[in-house]
Every structure is written in C-alpha cells, then in structure tokens.
Image (cartoon, rainbow, N blue to C red):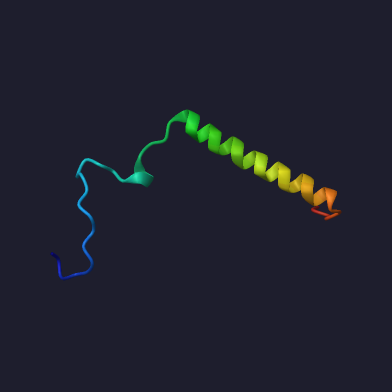
Length: 54
C-alpha cells in the first residue's frame, strides 16, 4: 500500500484504460450520428416553440 493516497484497483499493465482504447470506426460514426440527430431535434423543437436561434 502506498502512503501517497488511496490505492487504485490493480489493472493489467497492458490495459490502456477505457478512455485510451481505440474505438472502432462504426462506433465513432454511430456517436456522431446520434449527436447530429440530437442537435437537429433540438433545433426543430426550438423553432416549433418560436425560439429565434439566429
């Protein structure tokens, strides 16, 4: 146990961690598509409610 702080759970030294794992191309495009749909839906709802965006 290190006195410098709380101990992290043991991890495989070869495991780069969740955020450093490369995502597959399909996952990246799926995330982009979902984000685009959310943005478009937000704009449409705003316009339907009469909000002036620009």
